[in-house]
Length: 174
Length: 152
Image: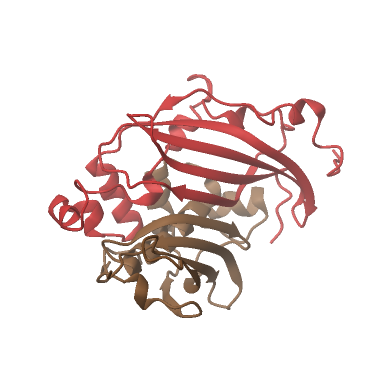
């Protein structure tokens, strides 16, 4: 297969720019999710763990660590084969089948308000850009997705523009 | 490497931060399979790229597994929220990943203030962020906005 940065973005793929996924209620994260986050990162900030401390800092109770706001475990993004369709609009894109090597290229995130543990949230994603360029790992497809997270009152709490780079396996080079 | 050793700083006040000042530097690692597996468990991300040396060599052409970008971002955010203290708040964060973190690598993050609000009623500062490995090679760049409490 030989693809160029000029030809790999097909009309069908280009038409997906602007496509929105459904508004989805996110799983409400629990104290045990936060504990596993603390185990993984060492981030035992009392703002995430101690209601009294968080109240003394002016919040209503303990907060979600910022990276867990809008958090969707991979099991919900990409169900196992035969166990339902993916809900992630990016994973539905008609990219070439060989493009299975996914890399995190970067993100722009804004937290408009603090989110408290147990607060119900919903999320909607939109494909906002698809580009291609050639690099050391071959021709990459760069997909940018905008995620908007709202609380139960519909207030916008968080936005993230996230870009992933898709490469053909096994063309990765160090 | 990521034992719960957070020491949350006391409040940092908007008036005390000046553009140009290096605010904080922190090093994490070396990266182990325990770190990446714990993160994979949290994220429910079973991508072998992040823990399976044999698979990575065969299928990705890399010498060993690499940290996920979200994991590196979480450590960077930990540094920022530890530094900014309980009443500080991370408002915006932009990250561009420029090189992978491999098993055994360290991650050294720095934040330097570049700009601040002229209005104490809107007490934000902007910082340039950089990450490098043990060889000094850049692994990420970024920028953040922190909102800090004001003395006024």
